[in-house]
Length: 358
Image (tube, rainbow, N blue to C red):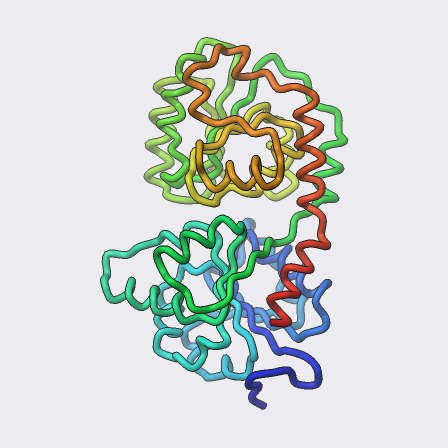
């Protein structure tokens, strides 16, 4: 049975295209538990299941692991769905498919995670296809409202704009926050969240080098991203900080990673674009001091829109060590309250319902 333009038996039939990875499991569960007013099916593609994903396909009847996503799309079963939501617009083959199957564009919603908006290839025709698909898709979904301006400037989409966020395990974060802080005799500084150049790790290392003789440890999560870049970061970090540089190259499950964030005192995130949202909001919720790049969309979102107490990276060059590490209890409590409101599940459900029932 084909579904065209409207509900069948009062329900939209919605297809989700999800790459196998760390976002899949919790978000499929979130959508299955909260959006039963429509039918959802998930096509999961990518490398085989591993310890990083922990996706139990057998627990969800509407989840299908697809070995070859392009072959699956070409079966025309994709035409059975009223809406198609492509999560994380990174795969050029999928983009090329929609550029060819233009009739599907009026059902297509593109959910941009961050870097996929900026990912440009050397292949001119692939870039033109991507621009065409973005311009003609029915819906554009961003995480932050501040990202709309970039999309309008570079892609000129004709479709509707939406903002929505994935599931956040507030219960887990709350239980970790309530645990007693482990005493330590050093300041733990987190620099970046992944092995991607947008974190500007080496630039931040040089900025922090004036504190290298203080009681600090510099933690650098590098478990995903570019391995060659990760090695450069580690080499430069060791040169400046020696054994005080600690690289996290192995994947941590959500519980372990939240425990790691609880251990931090300071987080520094130098990217200009929307990135590391989970890291930033968790650190703020835990009462940690966070430095963001001046005039970035992240500063505008957390400081201006969400009224969190945020520091900017350009302040560090003028700071003495005590100023750099100090953070008032008032600011900690304020940030905790703001992020607690941000993590509530009700606004997330409302935002996704707006998309599903569009």
